[in-house]
Length: 257
Image (cartoon, rainbow, N blue to C red; front, side):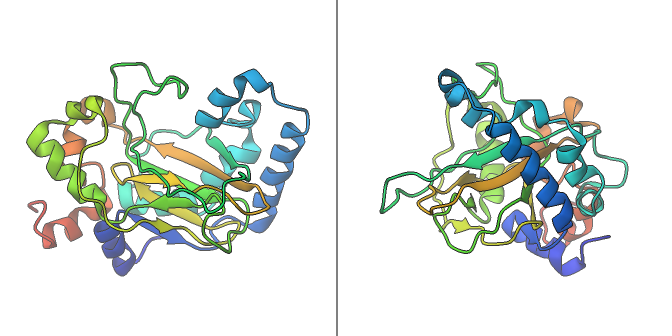
């Protein structure tokens, strides 16, 4: 399975692409069952800040019921159509990301971030940037309305951050999120089994959940096989690790052929 030229154009422009129905419902339901069984055993209240920031159900992160949502579905081929065949480091697990209902209504707007920045609870070592190549989100529950814990993106900001890091260096991210002018955010509406392919450098977040339902999703963080040697350069050249995007990037004038 490959993304079309027009889908790759949209990924170039927006920095993300939602693809419906990629994960079979039976696999999404199996993952949902395993997660609900796990949280039914209880969660230590004192660990909840780290659990929210890192992952729920940590014993399931590398279990096939979770890892196979990417490794054994068309999600893998779709990701390769952007990054390149054989260019993705092996994927052994995912972040299990749940958003429980909150009482605040009306909700506050989501706050954008880039992954890999240090916080006291997320496990990223202080003084480092743990960037990667692409984020792949898999919806495990239907999302019919906004402010239901929706994965949220700020389309096009990957281009803005690229320019910022060219001018200020990628290491400037250690000082906090760059002060760019943000476009209107988009909250992802969809169904269980949909996936969202997201460039690492796209501003994103999760909207508050004022619905009566828990939002269930898992997120895979993909790394190019050469990422360790070019992690800083990839923040100044956002298509460096995307073999499937080279032609479009060249046509748009952002990279030479």
